[in-house]
Image 1 (cartoon, helix red, strand yellow):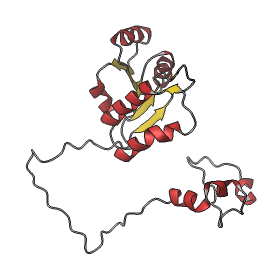
Image 2 (cartoon, rainbow, N blue to C red):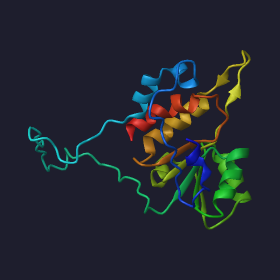
Image 3 (tube, rainbow, N blue to C red):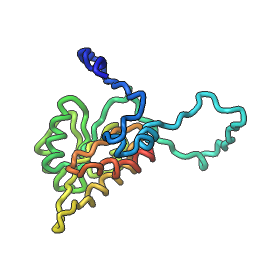
Image 4 (cartoon, rainbow, N blue to C red):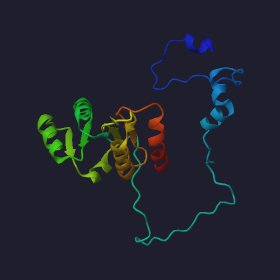
Length: 199
């Protein structure tokens, strides 16, 4: 294992770390989670390139009434459009920072806030909207809505859940979704996991 880290980092986009050949000995960290369960979660189902002989394609009618309007999948070749969901204090800084390199769409439910930020951040690469359907154009989503602390010290995730529902409704398959709001450990997986299954 040491030999893998003796080499300097290359300039490639990904870093691969060799997986252990055997499960770790009893009492080490991964066994607390259950190595077999952990390993099973990492293994994704494989789809064969060629369908098995018993596979038959379903015939579909070309009647326009029956054909669903499929959203185009976001590809790496698409021109990036970063949608910032929530343009409060953090969201405004995200719009300003990302607009230096990308086209940005600032979305908020408050028309008043959109007017204020539009006056504060004019620019050719920035658009603001309160219309949810405009989000369909985005390739990347940065969610920056408030996560407030309730009186009982629990986190109010209602704004965050609402924003995620909006993104789930309008994001195209292949979109990148990032929660910029402050959340507890594991909450991103819990909240975005179901959305990832939809795309």
